[in-house]
Image (cartoon, rainbow, N blue to C red):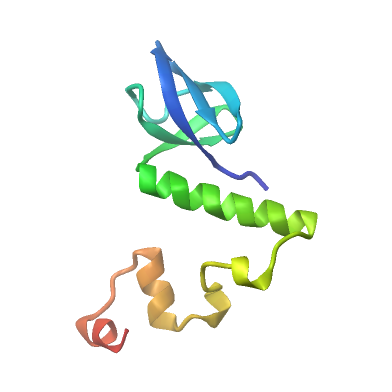
Length: 110
């Protein structure tokens, strides 16, 4: 399984960016996302940026990775979980979460 890591662009060079995130620096390929600028946030898989993301989205991904790390280390507490699992969501909530079109009738039911 490959997991994306949010990283912030520190410097740019042709086809690459020097990025920082989760305690490390990486030289990241930017061919798939195009031009980036210092301060931009990227979702990085291995050493390739796959998506430009907002700072808020970077915080969400970081928080989720922190929870996963705690769970793997056995230090997570039930109160640490800050999101509902898809298995506990309604069909309409899953559609809304995935960005799928929701009919007005379904939207009112949410």
